[in-house]
Image (cartoon, rainbow, N blue to C red):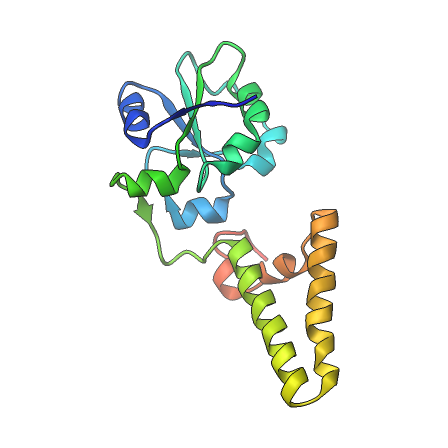
Length: 178
């Protein structure tokens, strides 16, 4: 199942006519950059919430690029309701911004947790390789450990590095109390 795609301009017009816009990204992503009219309903929490989103109005879903919404179209259609028209914004938030439509950006919010994990894992992996090549081969264990952690995260859906990064001072406000 796929959701019908609407251009960012068409989505804006639909919002002006009363449609409901739902951002399915995680709270940390939504806090940093969002479309002002969007309600945040993270995809990861969709199963925990019983909603009748539409209240007789069309529902427009968006994520960052549009891929997440299309990949989860069946789940989102169920969330919107059987008798509801449901759509996805073409290109997601990125498409909205490229169309010159306004977004709310709060640079005081931390970057998304997924990007933080990528930055830390990449830095540790590269550092381990450089130290292994120039200081001691024992440092090659660092990228091995990082690779094992990423493999574990992919197989289980549990990322230890993300759990640790939640305790970082810059993440405490958006990701909840420690």
